[in-house]
Image (cartoon, rainbow, N blue to C red):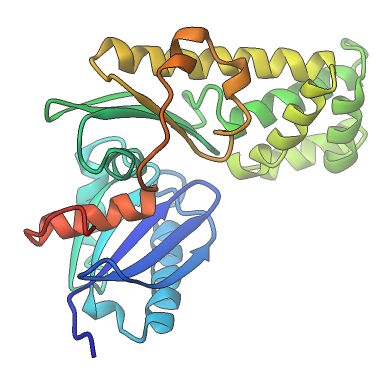
Length: 293
């Protein structure tokens, strides 16, 4: 019977939290999924989600969270201050290694080696490890940035829907479908927007790409502008010395046809995902090799 050590990886994003437990040999023991876990948007709520998801994975693996050496890659950590707050929360793990989700994703994609990643999920960020140095572009969150992200794409669709209600923009299928889900009049749309969070806007991103592929002019304009923003993130990492770029996140399969040629040429497939990247973080903190096979 395996008595440990056991490792937990957390990929805490703006729309969902993913947990995975492996033993010291890398054998997969359990996985679990929870809700949104961006600490910038909701610190206490994010930690609660992370713990609930961790407990679910631990229970399936037949261990307790106190037996888990945790690597936490969490959206919303822009500076070391955010990571320190998580550590100070004294979560009930055997040990904790904390960083932002982009770092965990980059470690996973390149096994701790050099390379760059662009995440196009609910939020967006570019991150690279080059010669031991970290380079980050974007990642400012919904209020200040997240250009090209799912939330950004959906927000632009809803904004266009508002213009259409005022007769300032010609309705298209995209506009009609957005209004069907947010309310087809000023009062309903205003009330929807008052409660809307980034993940609520992000739910419209698949619709925008679907409409763009069908020639919907409003969808096409949003996607083209979003692809330009994602290309700029990738190009910034290439300029900082990254030789390859992994495009990650919920929109990673939708964007490539629209990206600029130089960025598209630099795209590579990730070796592992952000959850395993977080496990690699935890293994490194324990003095173990990041790769288990």
